[in-house]
Image 1 (cartoon, rainbow, N blue to C red):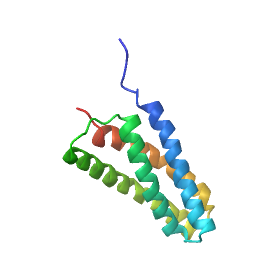
Image 2: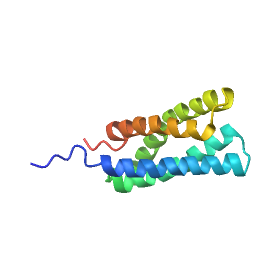
Image 3: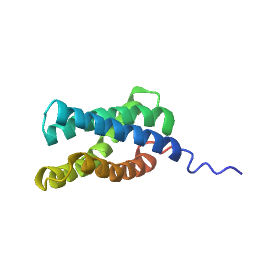
Length: 132
């Protein structure tokens, strides 16, 4: 008997790393090249990485079966709401540790994303792409 409980963990970790890299690279470009500032760069990176994450999670990680417009809209809404909640974790870490305390912004961004990946997996598995 094959245990399929964790069949989505490996692709989630792979795309989680890709999403994190997208988040960090976009943040760095916005902050260090375009000079948007810490918080605007953080929000811009969040928006782009959440779009990337939705597409990859829907198609390759949790293999969503949502087909109708209303099913996809529900799934997309839940995804963005859950990501918004974990986005506050990212934004809070960046604001407190990088903006106010002056710690290395890219390091804080990286550490915050590790926590966010874990929280996002739980939300995706239990709420958004739950097939039961």
